Length: 182
Image (cartoon, rainbow, N blue to C red; front, side):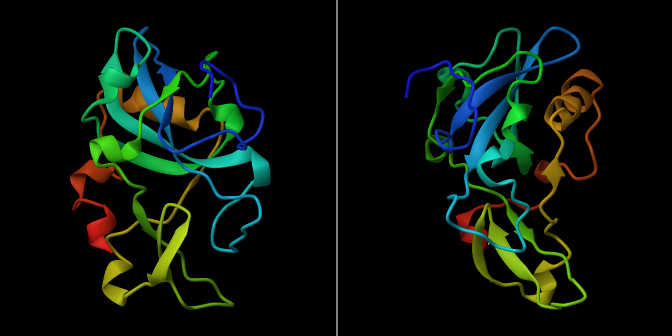
């Protein structure tokens, strides 16, 4: 893959790719591709915009310049949500590069499906992968997967890094999430 690039679909997106999120004070936060659902797969429990969606993440990183691979070393994943590829272009951004998530011990966060009228079974997911039926004790600590509007990531980053607000759903305030949690 040749960087930088602005995706027109999720076809060339890969977990670990990152882009700058311009902040209101002139600094930058970092968005990251966390997961991409293959177009041939569908799951009624996962918000999906087809070839235009991916699982985006906000990293616990802020800098005076756009992020580079080496800047992201050790940065934690704060939040994730299903985003439209247009979220990458907010503020004039594009994908700048790729750093494997595994290099920093990052994996998609766990989440539990909401209970619906037609199906009272709740499932535990990690990113777009269904892990198993959720145990009732897991239904409280894990949030559902949210769908983000195009400007949401930038607004969320401004709240945290410019305004200094730690939203109540900030994953760092909860138990660690990762492959060993499932």
